[in-house]
Length: 140
Image 1 (cartoon, rainbow, N blue to C red):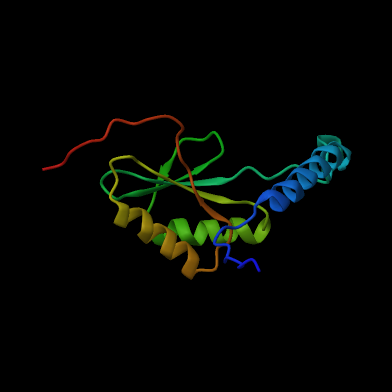
Image 2 (cartoon, one colour):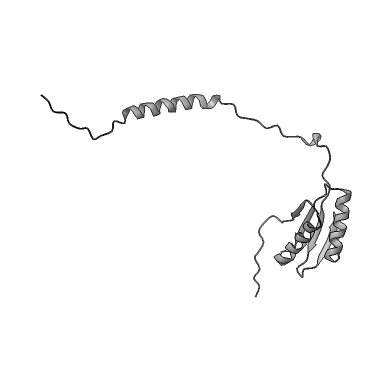
């Protein structure tokens, strides 16, 4: 009588066969899958044009100015800027407020303006940025 030996190997041939069959199935069905399409609205369907934003300019010395569209910035105290912006947003709630902080302005001054606007209930606040690289300045 023959003695049976224990086999200490795994036969991977069936696994390879299954993987090849799955690979063929995926290769055949992948081109048939329909991709979802998103229908974006065109400009002609827009219900209204967005309102021009209001700009709050923060100068390097921390002073604040209000600029409306293409006008020159008008320097005024922060409380007056907040009161005027609140009145303008009540007239047109869709109008956004953009804070344009100078590159040399302190971060704290920009956050102070943003905090004052939020405390008075002014919605749609954003930060105005410039595209491109700016040379870093070092302060001593």
